[in-house]
Length: 432
Image 1 (cartoon, rainbow, N blue to C red):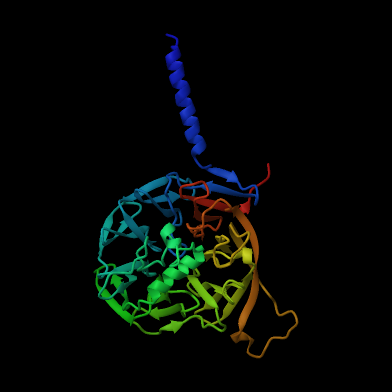
Image 2: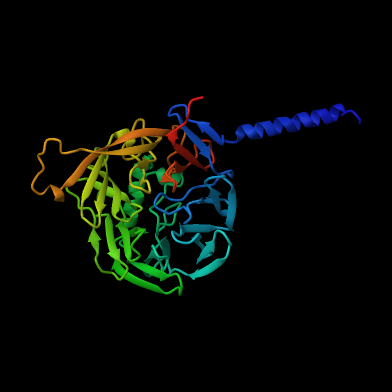
């Protein structure tokens, strides 16, 4: 066998150096956060991959996979093996994973499709009405729901179409005020929300039948309707919001798909009180939401039981306030994705993924009021930090969700540069 020449040796040395540098540039795939003692894994492999919004169902009906977006389209990640499986290619908008069948619903080229994640069989569902956006699927998978602007195109910010999700801060132009001064994230978000709210565009809710494609409209309004979420258990119950700066709107509402039983979920009791980023419990019995009394000063996660009318409020410290919260499938634990100092809480040390243990405050003194059953049940969150996000840029919101087996909390982050999907183990890592 001939000996390698000096030129070949030099070539292999350069190749080895290049591969080593590329490997060093890659974010780690598995580590223990030194500040928390919790194990973190990187689930995605391609830069630009992202998990879904916090209130979208991202998990397959069998609980084995999570849906993510990639620069190429939609993929799934096996939560046990971490195998990544591309499903749909192209420029798409994920609507939701189905709760009964292993399908994903999405919008592509203006048409709604459903693709079976096992067989890849794809069904054409239909088209939203003009200037309409679809955002949720009901419990028995018979109806999609969305909002539409009547007689005109949706309002646009400099970086995002706003007919569905609330406006996103997408670039430096969104952070400049009318006077040319730089705005904080919270100020810029308020400016964009105000601009859209003040237009009073005529809107309506609508449903789209998943079998026939038939569209039915209901609840016409000139308020900004947004943030639609079907109950995970009741196929005709829809939660939605009046979008806008939270201190200006009565945000959280429910309605039946036939337009009846319009119900306001939270009524403000003080000036500058805000409530929002609402989401369902897995059993469909409770609506949870971020409550601040007043805005930016006192922080709670509040709950309203739609069956009994019982209300709960769990208190948090300023640093524990989170852009979004979520609740475990069994309702026993909560999670939060923290926030940076420019956000509404102005938290000096809030850039963490949190696990929250709800602690009710018992009536130890036996002094219940005669109408105690109709009053708020108070409590507080005992917080545990899971991941240090000090290097995360919160212009990308992490959007925490619990895995179906309740062993992991999934989130997206740019803490290593490009966006990737991560999971942190709820149980602490064992010391070696």
